[in-house]
Length: 502
Image (cartoon, rainbow, N blue to C red; front, side, top):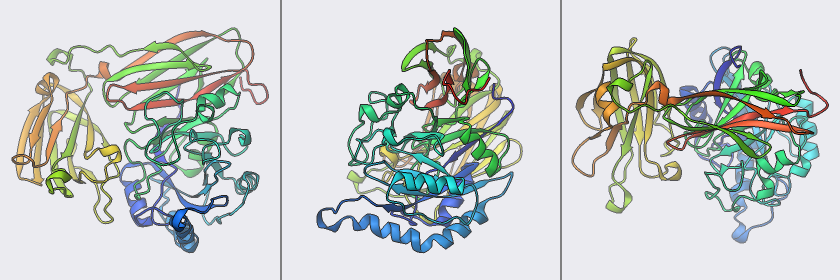
């Protein structure tokens, strides 16, 4: 299926103080390089049809637009300097607001491009076509006329993908998980959802990005983009996005393969009376379910073969999540930013990969999360947590370890901050249950080794055969882990006429 491509993770919609967010450009770039393969900075640029607000509060937005305009030369230089072919890709971009047409993120293919201030979406589209840029609508499901997407104005020309998920919530439909509630623009409008647009015969791929306003690209739980690209270079990443070889994630970095009659996600194909769907999802936690959705209906479900969590169920490889940061809350007047430093070492096994799950709060210009491999089986971690500023109230950070080993595999955790502690636990113990630890007496911060996740519990693979109705049809994959993290693979489009591929 996706074997010819490299899987990359990134965020192509995020903000900082070059706009009406907080944090420096240097912080955005440093955070992105810490845990992403690529990112695009999309500073707030304009809102041509904004109406005056009570008490002149529109100044919150207009002052942000001025900061981006005045700082644009600096933004251009910093983004250009951050790009490193084969190691990290940084894209220049901006966000254009519109009450009537919905907000759009512009992502340029190269450096040194200008800002643009059109007062109609046709002008923005023409600018993007002239500059070879992407134009990606986001927070789609807000009400039409109140910065929700305007599907009547949709055009594939420079909009191959749409943002199905961000910190605003989930735009797939108006009944699914992650409803809109963070902002004042309203709940999800049925006619503005992704499924409503697909029902209309529109064609696009799925992406997710954080829309973080804290100079924190890739914030866990706020949206992440998976791309199947030839290599880690800007041209290859944009080619993959234009080809719709993309999938949207809420946060956990699931690895998704999905194909219809051998055609990878995003393609348009000619199909006969039936098609064969093949899929494999490798989760970062226990998988709940993989669903195949055709023309708005769930037509197939598959589940993990979850064995009992006991020593005999430990497979090679397995995964373990370490989470830290529960601590004093504001009601006790003890809320604080807590600094963490610790080392993890694995014995009687091999540390294969580590997946940071970093949420954006609390905002701190100077603090950073750092994850450094120490030898073949060790990891040094620097982090920070707080009750305040966590996305949807979550105070913790976490890390997922993928390990080759067995029941005797041991995890030694040497904690230096916020307390001096050393603990050891084995895979056999974590197969039986989680290990909860405290840095001191209540209400000091706590941390947890979650229950071990066997390979069989984190993987769902399967196939199904689907009838093809008369006329155009679309098929996509939706996956959910037991911890609520989700993924959506871009649809494969069947019999959409012009532009079909064999």
